[in-house]
Length: 278
Image (cartoon, rainbow, N blue to C red; front, side):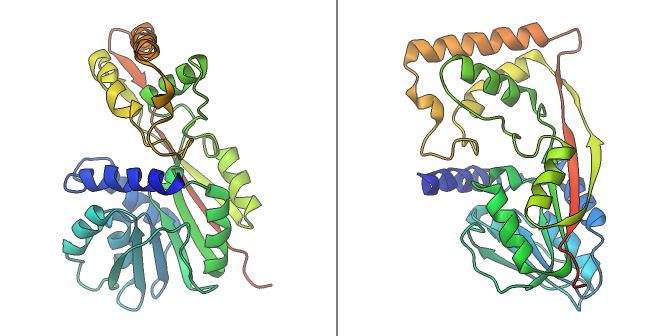
């Protein structure tokens, strides 16, 4: 079942690959994550869920020709776009590989930095992934990833609240990482230290129509909170689905004001490190 979930994620991002990163959101977020990580010349960098290489190429500029960057992803479509990109002069070489990071094998201390831009919530087992990344980092090595506030992305938040009422148990999309305190506790439990969370608020309004029209897209998943084949909403019969959609539209209507529906979008830039050898 988990494998089918990952296939859903891979297919979702392969469909988005040609347009991913051309907006004014993903690219600056990836570059800011690299800035926060404080990469140094000559470092070896692993970019998890690299996508089209937004963070990987920014990291390659920072570590320079003496460093190296390995970007891995489960979406062949995203990797195909990454491989077509031309790095800036003086950058580290970037290698891109199709790989499921949750079963990947690397030597201990193989990297000086691990990055995960806008993707950690898609992992089926975040705590286990963090423990693996800790092993792969050299002592003193840096981990940097994005997380989002618990109520970020109003349509998903509303649907998750309604799911429970309609008999579909669904954890919050950001249940493990939805606050700075949770992020810090999560990385400390995996053995990291010196965690710092930089907060960026890019919240804005959605029109009511835009918010309501997202229903069909988000209902089909994939859902990292329920990594199974298909959608956890598949158990609902047509009448139950109609009732869920009616409640979804009513809830958004109740939230809407003159400017539309407030869409919280708060990003956490989480940076921590593996303890150095004492």
